[in-house]
Image (cartoon, rainbow, N blue to C red; front, side, top):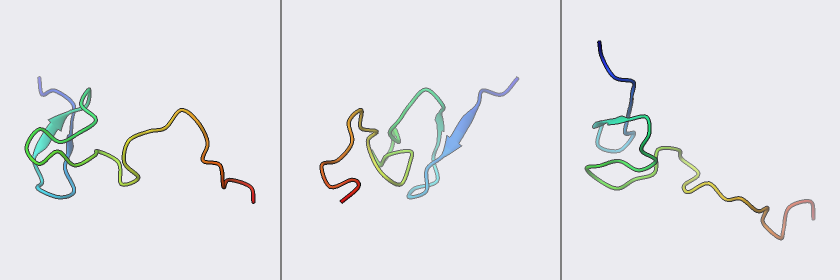
Length: 45
């Protein structure tokens, strides 16, 4: 059985889904980077 993976958009390495950054190149899994728990101050202006 194959583990669930995601493919890095930059170097195409397949990483485990529990990782947020690529093991090889360090790029974030999602294009917007690290998830933030608070809203930016300019939201809604």
